[in-house]
Amino acid sequence: MRLNHFLTRHFVLAIALLALPFIIDALFGHGWVRITDFALLYIMLALGLNIVVGYAGLLDLGYIAFFAVGAYTYALVSSPQFGLHWPMWITLPLGALIACGFGVLLGAPTLKLRGDYLAIVTLGFGEIIRIFLNNLNAPVNITNGPQGISAIDPLQIGSFSFGNSYQWMGMRVDDVHLHYYLFLGFTLLVIFISRRLEDSRIGRAWVAIREDEVAASAMGINTRNIKLLAFAMGATFGGISGGLFAGFQGFVSPESFSLMESIMVLCMVVLGGMGNVGGVVLGGVILVALPELFRNAAGPVQQALLGKVVVDPESLRMLMFGLALILVMLWRPAGLWPSTQRRREFAADDSVLQQEQETVYDASK
Amino acid sequence: MTQASDRLLELVNVGKHFGGVVALADVSLHIKQGEIYGLIGPNGAGKTTLFNVVTGLYQLDSGAFDFAGKRYTQCKPHLLAQAGIARTFQNIRLFANMSALENIMVGRHLRTHTGIWGALTRHAAARAEERDTVQRARELLDYVGIDRAHQTLAKHLSYGEQRRLEIARALATEPKLLALDEPAAGMNATETVALKALLQKIRASGITVLLIEHDVKLIMGLCDRVAVLDYGKKIAEGVPEEVRRDKAVIAAYLGGEVTETPRPQAGEGLG
Image 1 (spheres, rainbow over the protein chains, first blue to last red):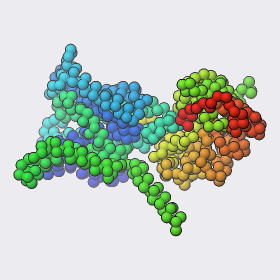
Image 2 (image 1 turned 135 degrees about the vertical axis):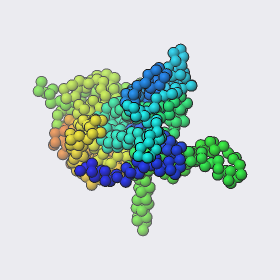
Image 3 (image 1 turned 90 degrees about the horizontal axis):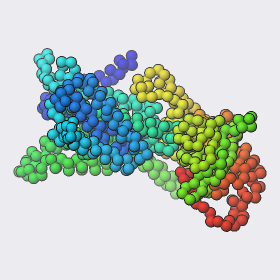
Image 4 (image 1 turned 120 degrees about the horizontal axis):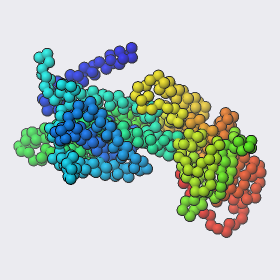
């Protein structure tokens, strides 16, 4: 019964999601399906970070490190680097587990830190991981240093590879389509987990810590364990996303995991709506799609208007990105699609002000 | 033996200092099961410091305290909450952006057990526990008299309602000892009368109450016994009427005698 109801309600959405890659393919071409795949990976990352930043209120600026850990785990055990070719159903959970371990490793020493200080330490952690990956090619070559690891095995289950093209019922299904469905499945799983956790005893404990850590501990919440749990959950999502990224891309190198990427994921969370799963998904979609749009549009538009390309589309892209962020923060400080709670938080002060003004007005009458 | 067993909380020579400032000096006192115990004293006397020590927010420097038959010298706040000490704060510390109901549900954290697995699968036991948590939270809102406000964010409640919500949240942890830090501060006369009735109701339900308060009328009308702190020392203890006439207490409050040392700035810390 419940399942039935759920299916009818989400039937249209499900059809739309299933058809999406082919619609995009038909309208915009192959490249955009690939971008959609990346959007899904970023959404997973943003949802993981949302647990740490949005729910538990722990500002993490080195989150991309867990993505890197997941990606390199996959790369090391499924590539010619060590001659290992482990299947994905071992590699992905392994990456998630190791990332989870790193989450706890980062969480443990930072338990007493809050706000700015926590941000600085996590930022350092993110950089340490990247620099390690960059330098672990000597004296023993593990990560292959700045050259990165290439020829990584594609994601595959048995003999079915997501990296191939198949011909089904006269329809050509390419790797980008197949990856889309795989990533969509994982993303839906991550969304499901996020929402279930949010509305639970654990989720409430996270929010309580965000609101007032001292009061939370006085109410009997073991703040150490609950914070570590937030770090671990967030890192696990990052690790899964990283593994998928490595299998999809077929190549990883340290430069994919720069501070800029951490900030990008954080922007998705903040811009979309901290603490709200829907908002974070929206943030991910926008921040992946918009820069690509600019990249494609900036050149031709300048050509048409000015007759030549004045500003390099690449730099213009970052400029517009910054501008968009500022505008959103000015007009929708709670994010594009805030949780009902956040909306109340921000709206609140206006209504109180209004009430007070009305009272004053009544009194003066 | 029988005399000791009716003592719920006993402080033995508890000392706490911040750098050179002595906030608590060899304070010994005991609170009996089922009584309302008042703690008074001028600002900076060390009342809130004492609260923070017995709730684990500060670690004491000397002495120890016994609670419900167990001795503590170093302890984490959540373990003391687990043992049965719940508190409110002098400057209200609610979870401002959670609803009144959610605030109390957080208070139930300690007495519920659903973990990650339960949250994800929502198996029968987890659902039952969640229902029970909501049910208990509603009852407690009703109990403290703000049931109509359950969806309101804590920060939008009136001051008096916030104080009551804090009490409800503390009660949600099923405490043996409820420690209230100036619950009547900032309340008007009507609210204070209602608070008094609430505290009597709480005591009648079998919970021991430890109360810091400046409202002398409230203390006198409510407490079974009172201790007076000044400069971090206990200067008097007894039934309210006795304490009220105590010379040292009058001197401490009214400055009857000129003290030879300048008043130390005892840190009230979190309070």
